Image (cartoon, rainbow, N blue to C red):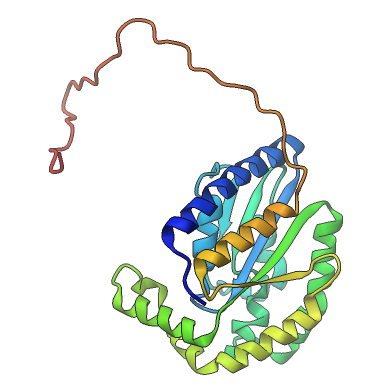
Length: 259
């Protein structure tokens, strides 16, 4: 697949981001709660699409959740307990950069959970998600698919770019050897958790630009009736002349090195 040109991507993205703004207004107006789970292989593009969705939205309304590894105390809790505090309140959109499905992916493949914990998780997930949906939460689950050849290109880019090297971890490097194992774990996860009330949607992310556009378009299409009236806003004219910044006392502006 030929990579989408940047200018074409930006032209297609602009109207989608305006529609995302409409979606945010709709959530605030109706008090609806929405959560989106972004899952996929390392380097698939989860962070990029989350940034694109949230870029022009109110950070007080739209939250990004990317939890670190569980603490010693959290590892003794009911598995879903650490995720519950991050569920959306009225009018909020919550974007999960990986979610409880860690247990069905990296924890299963890397041996970070027991077989019993894994089996119990697959049994409980449909019940847990049914409770969320029955309570009125709009829940959408996306799997970002990427072929290994593209994954390798992105690993190499991260290794070479000092600004992206933080994205690489020992677990990421190990995952390169376990591409097929992760695929099998994904298929088992789909079989157990692809339900009528909370289905999975798979998006091709071999080309991340196309993938972002397709995912955002699909997400917006889940709420077709999202237009709400917005009061026009006009700035009244200033009274008097515009003011100038003045500093008194010991605090002074930084010396300007870039003019």
